[in-house]
Length: 65
Image (cartoon, rainbow, N blue to C red; front, top):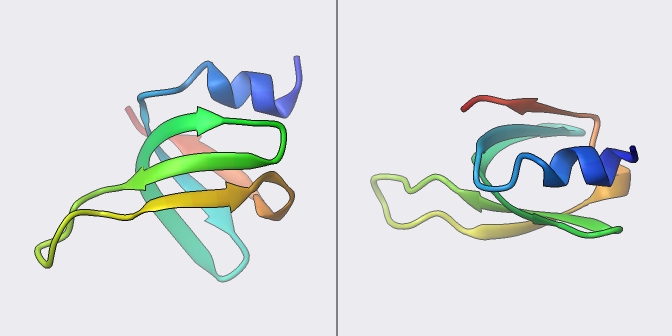
């Protein structure tokens, strides 16, 4: 099982994605061979953004729920 296949099994779950100098928390939307798509949690200032995070920049991923 590849890293991408393992991550794809958590689609729809809340995750924290650790990349250099940042942590992104949100709902895992999809996983491709090159990107992870995360819908950030809404903030008090508006809805969260949809982020395309390159697989090559991911240090680790924590599944929260």
